[in-house]
Image 1 (tube, rainbow, N blue to C red):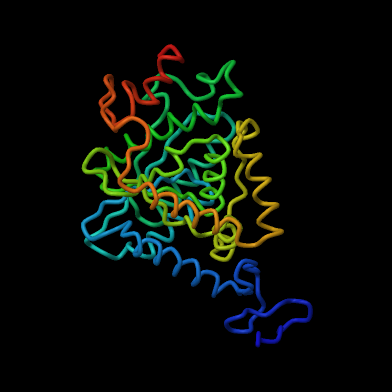
Image 2 (cartoon, rainbow, N blue to C red):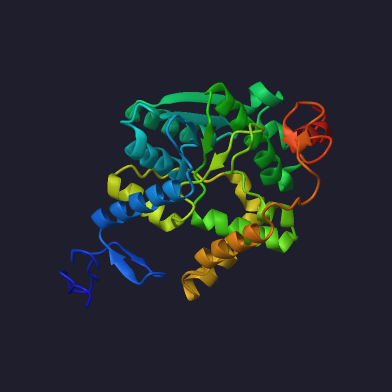
Length: 311
């Protein structure tokens, strides 16, 4: 039987009976601030351990945008590995060059890295691609998220390489991952549906890991509020053009009406990955003829995009 609420009208934490701050609808549990922090920490630790995302000797580049997900990611990884000598963390921030938005999040990223005493590396679109994202997108605003995604991925890899990283950790949460599964299904993109960039790459690329992949977005926001680290930062002005925004709205509604939907999407993705394990989907991985990055064609996405942008 659940503990009785200690305050009238406020549900009790399913663990200790203190006032709950969140209801995990897919489990039915109510959690107080203390036990939500513990629960998220345990889930992230279990995800890392079960998938061997981080092992002794790793130098982990943490993609730190300064937003809530990447902030929580660096804090959680620092709590897990900050005192270990055999694992190093390096924060990597990409400055895309988005006026009125990126300045605040970059300041937040710099402040957190200093507070945690974590090495911090920054790379910019201007340095790598010759112009800011704002300039590159003139007349192409509807393609903003696709263009930014390709260039940002390349920039993160450059930052991780400069850091000497063996792994690249990103702040993708459960909502993000479930949205990606649904988007790939809607696009009929089997290659991206079965791809696992966190597996051993055989030295072809730096493996990407997603320690927050089983933590919901609302849990991350609550986690930061409990720690007193929440900042009310602006939203990217280009996000209004994203297909993901529509999928996010649809999936959030389904998750509310049918708790556990996002986790079931992730479970089904695993089944598809297993079914296609060892099979080649699309063209075999080779090397880009211009930059040498691993890709599935003559040119990687970044070089193709740069040509289309006249760069």
